[in-house]
Image (cartoon, rainbow, N blue to C red; front, side, top):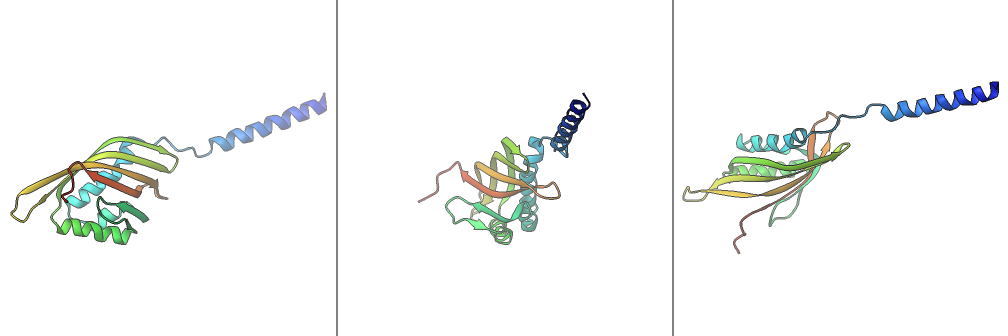
Length: 158
């Protein structure tokens, strides 16, 4: 009986340790609001004409895939890309989240955007489209884009 009690105690201790390990530091589920914050910050940065803040929404090694253009990789190059958009007169940037999801420190956001510019005569042109951002939570808990792709709802002029 003593030997059986010892084995039962050992098994109970082992199972308790396994249960404790599985419950250690489980993160709360990520909300759609948390995942979409990156793009709200990004839109605010463009509206404030702040390419540095816009680029800080991306990881250091992020890649963006603009429509009809070559991929842009690295935060510094992404900053230059958005400096060009700001210099071209981008304003009234808005985003709307359609769906989000996450698993651990990886997530995604699918949404719609609108951005206005003025042509050479001063006429306001508003572009609308769709985007997908692949996101990664950094060590400080902030979600940043690792890959972003978007397209417009209008056909490119040939």
